[in-house]
Length: 172
Length: 102
Image (cartoon, rainbow over all chains, first blue to last red):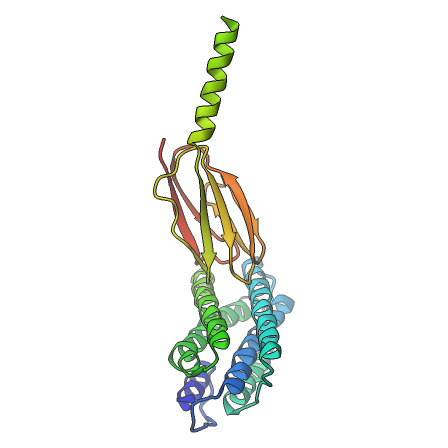
């Protein structure tokens, strides 16, 4: 199951080689994957805030930063409450590697080319994470509080995907 | 006569205020909950944000614009009759419509 997330995530992020894990993720791994996914979008937002001159892109990026920080703060509070230590895993590592590559790729772009690349990737990235959340991470989560937070994350990411698509439509 | 008019006015005011109803529209998991089916000018809506994120309740026609920090609520008085589409300025995928009858 976790293999599909990795492949899906990497395809969306434009990578062809994949690292895979065989088993369904455990709660400490799920917490790590969800937190990592949030941090990736925060890093992308920070890059966009720094590079873009487009008011819509900057406003969108600021919203991503604020929302994902809020959810990740909740995630940290939850793992602390549960006494769970998030556990690094191949999915988190693959996501981080792909995101680092994307940041480097986008760093070479400027102006409208950057704006379009950023917002198109936001649509694709949120779609990928939503699919991973609904098909794998939420069903695999054992702890009820963790499951509830992931469901909240899915609702958030779904709205972000819609929001990104609205902004992206203005760049067509 | 003056007294009668005053009394009538007081009764009318009391009747009006008694008729006004308070409703709650809850926001959960990035969605506006059901809006009241029968809304009239003068009714009150309490917008209750149960999410861990900031939202707004903003009318497309700008007749209201409420800031709703995480896990907070804000109240407003319903304005003139008509259909008023609204959304969250921060999350424009969140939308709804108030149907206000005369």
